[in-house]
Length: 118
Image (cartoon, rainbow, N blue to C red; front, side, top):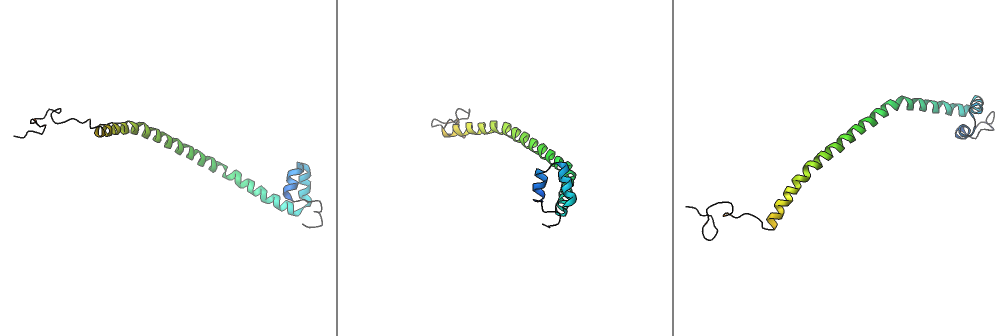
């Protein structure tokens, strides 16, 4: 730091944090380094304010996308669970050999239970 008007300067962050508004403005008038840093910070603040509507719009788009994803996941789960349960029933019947034979289905069979073909 320069010795001329900045002997009491502890840096921009410290002065910004610990001084009141009036004292900070007076300090900026006497300290070139802090004034330059303050100008940079003001520009950053302006850029943030300029970007704020775009950020809000992006957040809104993500919320809509997340809502749609949850909706489709709920619909998929609602429709797929009954279909899976039908598959489980069929599997259980095959494993337990609870299948109909030809005679139970009303097809012509011989005395051994084989299909009777003329």
